[in-house]
Image (cartoon, rainbow, N blue to C red):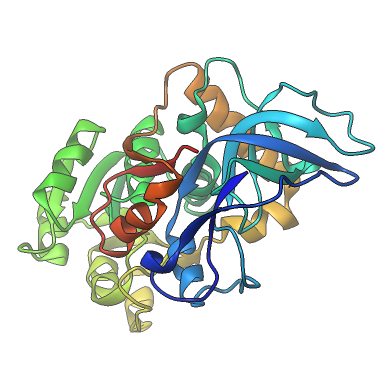
Length: 324
């Protein structure tokens, strides 16, 4: 099989596409013919050994794939050869023509759901749905401020926030990204390259502040967003593409607000029933057309370096997919 391989930690330009032996599924495993693999921010961090999970060199990047079951290991009776599936792999193995996965992690795809639409769904929309519903208790009619709204995860918050009945304010760094946010349902937008995030958020809420902040950016924007939050608001900590911020905790007292961590990956291991519930809701919404994740770019294996570079340079808008 052909696969993208990281042989040394460094920039994505150091990746190579090579021929590897086809893997065999072991007991409790399935072999998947990969049709699509999501390109995510953790993938970029792992390349430079900056992620919380350290990959053993050499490795194949990519943590979530969608495709067709090609072979079964021993003791697997939950899926059949030929089944259409979505599967988180953990952290590696997805940028390849074939991937091995634990059968227990595989989810059957409804026929109405395309492979590219499904891959990355659990990573981005899973994180968002867990955050908005189960950690942030977002209610219909509340105001949601989304930072980094033009990226894969941020845009999923725009989409799901609207689906859940919130008024969505999308904040991003370029008008191109904000145009897409408006297309995907954002009620208001803020360009924090030339607008003050706190002041504009207060203006758009008549001075009351926002109910929920969804922050995938961190850095200097985090404190501005916290200052824009209203009484009893919830600040959801999702990620740190602009760096890990230092927050003055007196703001939480003055606003009687909460700062809430959202770690979807750890939750799936600790609360598998909740993870299943979230996955079923998301796949049902995609199947019936209520949710359609935006795909901005599709690459073959030979374009993996370019795909990853687009995320590192923060030029990617929406979801980026590898299709072997």
